Image (cartoon, one colour):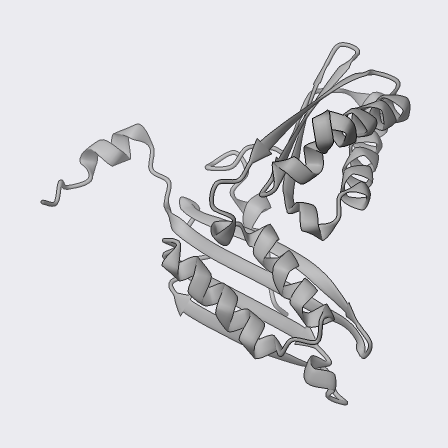
Length: 221
């Protein structure tokens, strides 16, 4: 029986931080947790794949919710003269009954973001582009952008085959068991005429060392 751990959750508290940062106890914790899920679902539903939303971070203060949206195309999320983000803020305030602020941040290198790569591959599969070509293009783009390793998996009725199968594309190294390894992971689904095809992406961006470990590293000229 395989033992699989989510690469992000495996590193929380070591090199990763929580995507929701607040504290509550008892029934209040369950209420706020469901509210966070509703906020994330609402933002993802209102933002299309074209907007390139990668991750959503939520912080809570007394009677206030602070939301940070990381996207590769902030102009689409903000809209003309901020119309889209104002409408989104009003909808989230009605959802949570609290004062809500939204900060839109730009992702400088979308070629190294696993969520955006998985979404891009899924959209290509929905447009009937050959899965091998889409996967290889993503691998090449990530390695050219400076990734130390990438692994891409597609699973389902690939190319309309009668039986489901799984295919991989791999380049470089992806040390999943190393806790200080900066592994970015994401998954997405492509809704094709033959059924849903799952897409998983792992990207290795190097090791994150503490200040003491970084000082101990030998200097190479």
